[in-house]
Length: 502
Image (cartoon, rainbow, N blue to C red; front, side, top):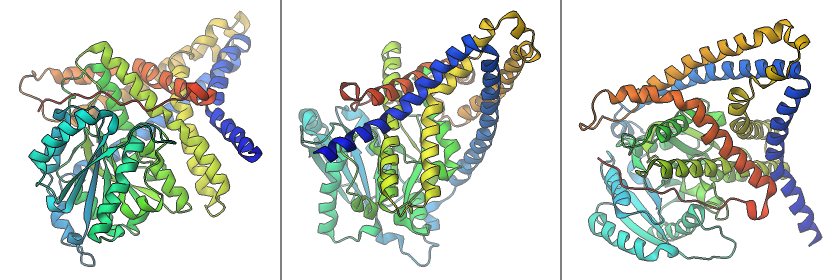
């Protein structure tokens, strides 16, 4: 008992680190601006210059990924599968997990329709529609209609019902898909399939796959040097209802897309995110998705990374899956849902103590990998919470508190012009991002005039505001909740979804 208590406090200390770093930075930034404004001016200029350089090279990675996306999405990957001589792609099977909770039939139907449009043999797919006991009535009605409409379209359509109130579990997607994974294993074992020849895709229920997705995924899997030691991360577009969404939810969702686009070109930074794929063997080896956390979609990568002593990576897939924005038809309700979604994503900070704890205990993992992934994770959540506030809110604060002597120094006099110059140059990056986002849009519905494209470009002017209210603030809240622990800890929140308009 004493050992457990000792370990508990050690782990709680690790959980406090990200929040302590963030609050120490923000408090010190204000205090130094008041007491030593000249120091703060130097810091703000250096910080803004660092971010200008960072945004510049991120735009390079954005262009690389955007180019790869256009190249890869135009290929006929099903025909390329036949060119692989040492493996027969027909021997491989796909398991597709679709966890759902309170979603209406229209949302689930749209996802199944997109699966049927895949340019890949549907008889190689097993679909697992995973519902919750707490939503039994709605789920059974939805599952019955799906079974009637799509039951004989795929190799097999399995429905599972995750029991409620299981001790040790957190209600949410992780526990649902954990339960469904075990039921799928029973089916795979019954069929006598080799785990290495089963490819798993875990999708959010509103995910629409690109017609080439499964062909491309199978090609990547069969040509990988060690396919069971990879997760496969596609592009994430939020396009299902993009034309109906308001400009705030569009900008926030597109910013997420561009973050992933830049990371795809830097695979050493990649975690799995949202909808992703992997081998069934790795999934079984680590005991399926973790059932007591919020962010199981990215944790599954870390489970494999630790289990295989660092010999596990994420392979980028330049083929998209498309999901809904949080827009629900009502502006303020949509903004509230957007905030909650970003806070849930920011709860990925719970990976920091998990990584630090398990990396320390794992003596077989190379030190350089431990340092790299810990740094990427820590710097990522730290910047998420602090950078927008420092850049847009605290940048000019020390100028107001500098006395006449300090204001007369050359650096203080030039600071406003330096900051204005950096912000102006950064706007060029914003314009480039706006153009890219417009080029990625799905076809415009006929009911919208062509001028809506001007709105799609002009909407990015609110990006600095969204970075603070849907970036920094939910990230600060998430890290503060983790630091405080107990009743402040975040539970799983299911994003509301409504059927998209075709």
